[in-house]
Amino acid sequence: MKKILLITLILLSNLFALQINQRSVKNGNTVLLEIKKQNISDVKLTFDKQNINFFKNPFKENTYYALLPISYYQKEKDYRVIVSYIKNGKKIFEGKSLKVIDGKYKSEVINVPKTKFKPKPSRIQRTKKEYAQAMKVYNSTSKEILWNEDFIYPLNTKITSNFGTKRVYNGKLKSYHSGTDFRAKNGTPIIASNSGIVKISQNRFYSGNSIVIDHGQGVYSCYFHLSKMNYKVGDIIKKGDILGLSGDTGRVTGPHLHFSFRIHGIQVDPLDAISLLNQLKS
Image (tube, rainbow, N blue to C red; front, side):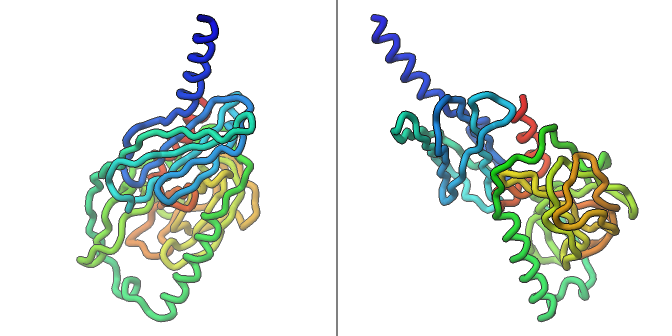
């Protein structure tokens, strides 16, 4: 009887090692997976075409975590998340069901001057170069976590445009809103959502004066359309530092802060990501 009970407990321990914070997720949002288990290694997950490594959670003992970003364009259907790890020399697999659902994002009509909207060869070359440079940064994953406090919003003002809104420029559907816009008149101080290292600090065609912070382990926060930038690439940032001042640089219709997040290279809802990241400590 004792032997049967022991075997049952071992099986249950393996069965419930993997925890997922939700069973359905909107496109453009992020999923948190955690494994609480001792003496395991090489923890990874596979979702559709994504392969993501787990990291040790520095805030919880014997716990590993992974952030699974869901693309805005991810097909809506049922998926299987497969997690593997090595324990006692054996590779163990666990799986969880995950359903991607429609975020039901609204549409927004934006009219911009033709001089900023109509592409020119020089602008096309510039934006392609800037995009390639940025994606090289976003697709880089450092092993170290660079923050130890909860994430905060960069401004405490009205949100004027939410993440995911379909962007209709001059009557044509061109894209979706890749971040959250905060109301901010020219010269408003913009603070860092959390600690990290500046990886981008430059003027870009679409986003204007831009600062991007690497928070470690594939997490990046972005602050666009600034009128002034206080930091350069390589600078160490602490949570709450004033990164610069809001403005209307880049392709915009007026001054505001565009705040966005990238996780493992994929654009996700920054406010949802903040809520999720703060769960790592709870």
